[in-house]
Image (cartoon, rainbow, N blue to C red):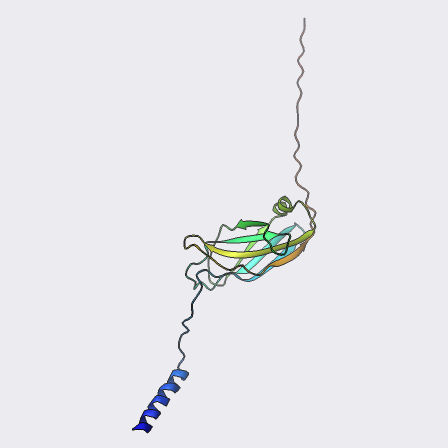
Length: 160
C-alpha cells in the first residue's frame, strides 16, 4: 500500500513538472515603453525619439506619453505630452522635436540633448516608470525667422 502511494505521488509530481502551466505573475498597471532611441537630423535640426509600445497586457494602457528633455543628464528641464497613446502591442512610436522648438527651449545650438519617456494613464491614475535617459550631440545652427515691422509715415500738407 505504501509503495503504491509513493508511485502515485511520484507520478503526480512528474506530471506537475512536465505539463507547462501559465505563469501567474503580477503585470504592471501601466508599462514603460521599451527600446527608447534618439536620433538627430543635421540637415533640418530635428531630434526624434523612438520607442516601442508595451505588449498591451497592462491594466491601464497609456493614454499618452510624457517626454522629458533637457541639457542635463537627468532630462528634467522640460516636458511635452504626445497627442497619442497606446495603439498596437509592440509597435513603434516616435515624436520629433523641431529645430525651432529646441532653440526656444535652450536658446543655444550646440549642446547635448537628453530625453526620457513615461507612459501615462490619467483615467486609471497610473504612470509607468521612466525609461532610461538617452542623449545625442546637437549642433544645428538655427536662425529664428526675422520679424520685420514696417512703418509708414504720412505727411499732411496744408495750404493757406
